[in-house]
Amino acid sequence: MRNFLKLKKNKSFDYKPRYYKGEGNPFKIEHKLDKFRSTAHTQRGLKNKVTSAFEDLKTEGDKNLKLRFWIIVAILVLIFLFIIDFDLSIFLNP
Image 1 (cartoon, rainbow, N blue to C red):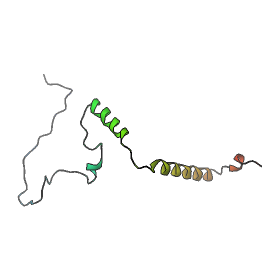
Image 2 (image 1 turned 30 degrees about the vertical axis):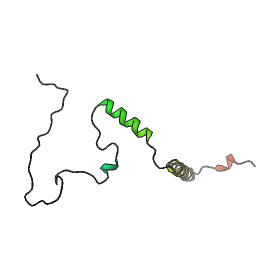
Image 3 (image 1 turned 90 degrees about the vertical axis):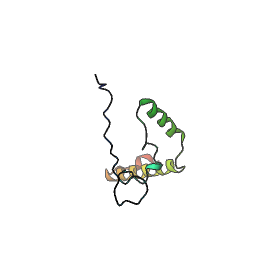
Image 4 (image 1 turned 135 degrees about the horizontal axis):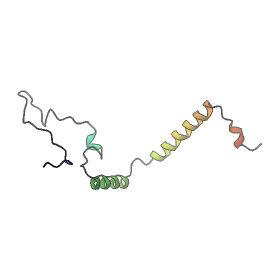
């Protein structure tokens, strides 16, 4: 009896184009930025997902990211308040 929890693997063929002179496999579809992504080539399994998530938490990104994020959020909130015609004078002392 086959194991019904395992997925069936796709067949692979060793076809090589006649006139292709480049290096690597011409049929491999890969994005240009996949080598910089941490989630592009992850392996299956819960343990591997958890360990990669902890590694991503340890790495720091852009230092100004939080500042940019809060500036964008503040601008969007002010635009929203302007659209709904909110009166900001309730926060100011007379």
